Length: 393
Image (cartoon, rainbow, N blue to C red; front, side, top):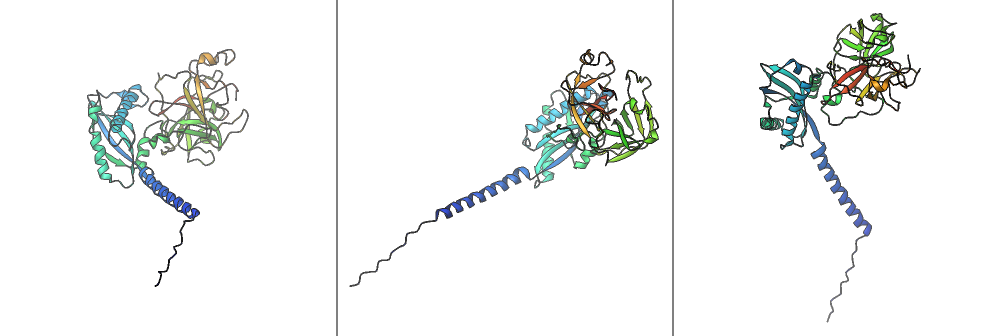
């Protein structure tokens, strides 16, 4: 009789370190997969720009709608932009719609046409023709949301980023963040970046920076009269454009200098000059004009303004080669004319700006440069010219 042999089975146990490694590896793989999904769904996106014209029936065109400086232009453009935004934010493209901006109001018979640019963000794998049809369909719903504005969109045209630059640089007072229809805006620090202040000009005498200026057309610069009292020969002046005075983007000669007829050096009254260039400046994303204000544009004490230039950082210091910017407040002439201040020297045609605590101001080399303010539609207007201050230089 044979007893079957007993087979012994060895007990098996997994190495705890191996288990940990396997779990960690699985977690890492899942994290990578999730990360890739998030990237392709959220970050693998491209900006798409579209141009359209909206006819506003029953809205009579007037000369006040020809300039972005007027309150009528700002109000109507703002309402149109708000209605477009509202329409898309209530649609199935609410997450893809970024911004809309009116670039021009023009006349069509007795009606108004608004030329607009819209920005969307879609994944790169979209069917562009299908998406264009969806946008057109949503735009056609806009008359239902237009309240008392009878708005009728026309054909939608896809455009490139370069097209938007060309359209926006026909406008005045447009910074690079508006050209890209970006929602991110940075106005901090002292050093300016290219495109921050595209109208800023360096006026150089014998290749050395002397004064600032503001580009107001493709051949004219607004500056201060006192810059040219001892340097009146236009042939010795050069205007440069861009943030660097050493490596400017453009360099243009000067053909004429016009001083305000009523300029009074002893009181600084009418310290204004116009500089004519010997050829037209080529506008681009980084070089174009600032807006001129209406004659009755309100400039409120306490409101924010910006001053820019290559002036020295301290009294009697040297000018700098990179453009600087400073945030200041408008100060009432009453406060500035106090005995402890300028004691009545600030006259009715002058504007006082700075910070009560000091530290940010214009200085030597900033003369002639622009003092600018932003309106409700992100357009910038020149409200003053750097003229004189506490330290006489």
